[in-house]
Length: 189
Image (cartoon, rainbow, N blue to C red; front, side, top):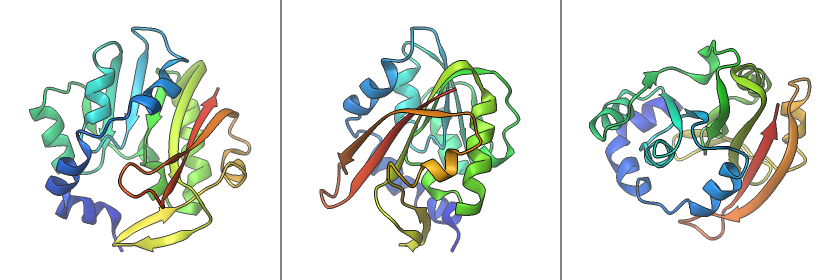
């Protein structure tokens, strides 16, 4: 199972399916903590949908590990697009906010706490982070991709000793499959 390979092989279809999803309610949850001009790190930006939206009012840096997503992002006019994994981030106090929409759910369970520590380090003091996970209790492969599902309780074991405080969470329906729920979380440094 290689999640990155899956996205490389299915990049065009993934972009087509996700680039026009209406994320307004998710953006509202996140953006109420920001002010215009703040800097945002978009982790695992995929189709570039969210980076494009944020770039209208914020300074956005976008990272992903799928070359096809990098090339697409550049072709739609995104700036500050980098091939980089969240595990390899070396940022320190660089961003006012982090947006990790449906990306950290592909991080191996044993790496997730370390990834949250790297995100904490990347944020400026009093910075905010949005992240989303499929809701539930599952770790493993689905359709060729690795997933970790979390709940508002189980995420706490992965943010322990990071410095983060969970200040808000919302459980939402999946925009494709109403049987799937999502955990949307706001963390604060």
